[in-house]
Length: 120
Image (cartoon, rainbow, N blue to C red; front, side, top):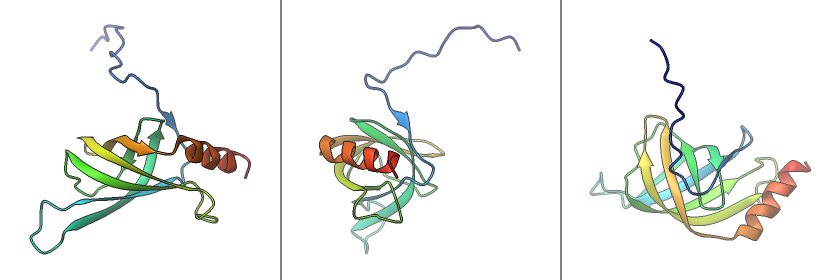
């Protein structure tokens, strides 16, 4: 099959960047699937990250839309020094994971964590 050569239209306003392979995140969302459990705790690898959102690679089902508490860890050897907390909204799901739009994040702290990781 011949490709048309046309580029796929980019719908995202802000760019996201691939991060280090060992960048992990944990999200907590309300559990719509269970009567006995109030919160789902889901962990995975961060595939890409920007000032407005991220994509979390996980095999776990994630409700969309849902409010999420997020903890991103840039270095498992020194997690308290290279961790940023945020709040967000799950906006899309795929077979690979979930896209999250940040509703609250300390961009200065995010920058500090990224620089600390780069200088490690």
